[in-house]
Length: 215
Ligand code: DX5
Ligand code: ZN
Image (cartoon, rainbow, N blue to C red; front, side):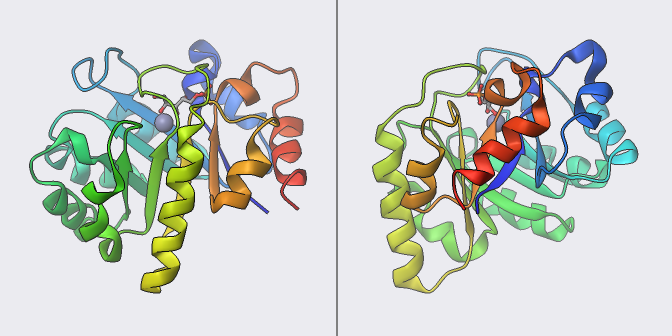
């Protein structure tokens, strides 16, 4: 069964805690951090992560869409992030960023944009706990799933098996009941879903549907 990480980018920012309390059965809460430079949008920051970590029991999966994330990963770990994701495109020193995440006691995740080939992260695979394949161009919720991500996940999953590695594969962008089975069969362990969950009346039911479709 697939793990589900609701993305609070699509939750109601004025009632964030209320929305979060209404999602039951999720495995992680996905928190998008944007700096208006790496991606053309702004979103949550350190204070939101700190607040959520204090008030919720669920593990926080923090997706950093910021330039030079190595300058901030320690602070995000201290704020209570369980998993911290850094984009290969966002720094000259991706290996250092991953090292710093682990030193700070969090789980390390490397992220690739749709236009970035897997060769960019091959060397890092033994070092990470999770790989995030972006299935939309990052920055906004509610975009259309890019079909090319399926083949990318399949190739990554084959690489994981060939090398005997154990990282989880996560996918982010455009996930719904229409494609969750397909990405799960391709090798995805964790599905991020924003608009599919928070644009529906019953968030918990949406999470359960994604899980039921991958039983
Ligand atoms: C996009 C974010 C996603 C976003 C996904 O840059 O990284 O986490 O919230 O939203 P949906 O599921 O609506 O595509
Ligand atoms: Zn995200």
